[in-house]
Length: 538
Image (cartoon, rainbow, N blue to C red):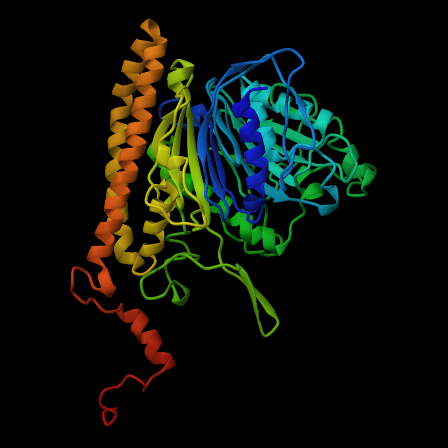
């Protein structure tokens, strides 16, 4: 067994306990090749959870016959083994699972939970294990789906309901999976190919409705996808109603509509304004219709457009989190947990945006059939909140990552940790958000625009090296990825110091700017006389 693989599988399981505390907190977007400006397939993934992320390269390896990998439980300890395959691909991964392999296959996920009595504590594999094992074994997206199905059939699935984004350089799929209940075998799952020219998204709620059972080019599913629901009494095949995965396994309620469907709405409304999509469904308006699983964007999306879509607090909508009393005087879009609360026995909830302070890291995986696999697959990687992060490219063939991406601890601040650097800037900005976010965005745009401008030249050099010296090509792209990742972190440290200096003690460069007048009027409405200097004047 490859030592690095074993180490990562154990790390995945031990640290997943921290991830699971906020597991229902991720957002994924899928963009097919004909929906992008340059033919790229994209998937995005915000891994939201209260933990310090790590990133590493799990190298490709050949394995002896009859060898095994040993996934551990979340609580630690190895409690089973999985047969190894003859060869495993190299994977860029983290404690939340594999993200991109050297064959241009990428994965993301969101947890929808679903019916609690379908969770199977006796299964061996969690969704994090499935993501890593699938990417190590799959050379195409539909191969990854097949691997996941075979693994859960043989070893059992122990996580709750899960939606996966799975893509390669030609195809993109959404796969949804839930267990069979305690002691059961396999899992109930279905996977649909997103039509070329369309985009799809999911955000902690099952999205697949009905599906064709006789179209293997575009739909794959488990033998038990319907029978599990029938056995548990969730679906009556004689009732005359069509089977719907999401309605059966993750029924609607006021919480998941507001929490999950609102994020689907904001991605779709921004990508296709012409659809004029209403927010009635996530707001729980009676008889409102759910959103389609996929839509055609009004215009093809560039890499920069995809970055932008993952930065969202419902700006310029009635639910804009930078507006209103709850945003404070400086338009802070963040609401501290818990998300729900009660006043006079009435339950309320803050909005749940795509951009959240709880994001550990996010990715934009870019996959391209027009380039050799070592060059075509790139993981744009960002730490902490998507709105104030900066995406830096990591190519799928690299054999090292920036050191600052793989060090640090949630228990101790360190300037050596990229996550802490980005986290510090994001937290400090909350003190005077409407001012500081502009400074952050200026640096963010400068770095990302520069990296996007360099990309064609860098890749042209890499393609030429791929023809003549593949080993040198790998070294070249590794050096490029690592050096630019570290330079981005250094620039962000400088930004942190600049913000501390510029906004020290609430001033801006030593100058007081006070509070916005609309907010002052709200203060005076609640305390009309407390702050009046001359009480004698009306």
